[in-house]
Length: 113
Image 1 (cartoon, rainbow, N blue to C red):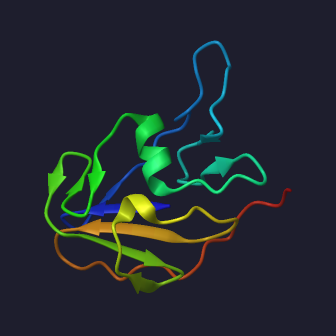
Image 2 (cartoon, one colour):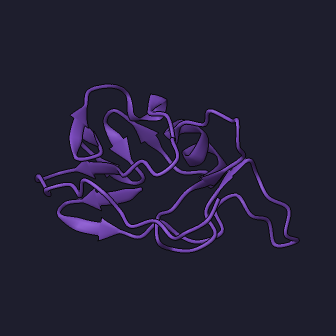
């Protein structure tokens, strides 16, 4: 997942959904690359991730930024509430608020399950 606000990259932090004691939520990040991990068989959404993160997400709000939030999956615009976008294995999801930034169509995910 990539986030852009006012033409600037917003870093998705490591350890969203990971407690200091090492307990993990079903949806989480482990490093600041924007790669989101989730339990196999689960159908999480961006809304689930942002809820675990404790940050705002709506069709007009991305974190503390206000304005129309545009969603791209695999480089194509998706016109629905960003909270309802499903997280899928190896999906390149881009959220933007503010001026247009050409979204990436793909990401070279690390090898693994």
